[in-house]
Length: 90
Image 1 (cartoon, rainbow, N blue to C red):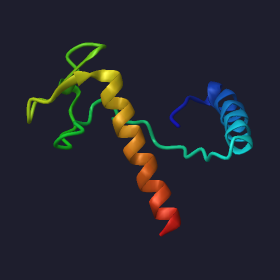
Image 2 (tube, rainbow, N blue to C red):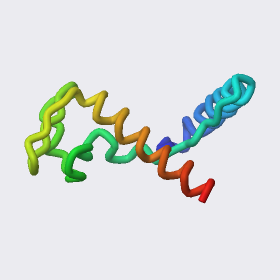
Image 3 (cartoon, rainbow, N blue to C red):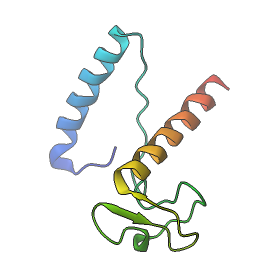
Image 4 (cartoon, rainbow, N blue to C red):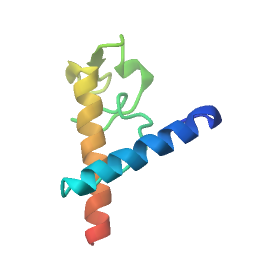
């Protein structure tokens, strides 16, 4: 997670609670680096600030892929989590 010094404790508490809840439900929390997840094209992998012409819109400058920015971020976070999970199971 990316956070400033001031809110690192808050994020740690959140992650601790989330991990506890997930474990009680038989799930696993995998923390991933959120940097560029909403700027990376899930279709071609191109990373650029220009891929986000607005808060809500994602439009890849390289391949033209268009989607809601939250959807793009969610896809990229999921993929990063799966990569980390698979590396652990390796």
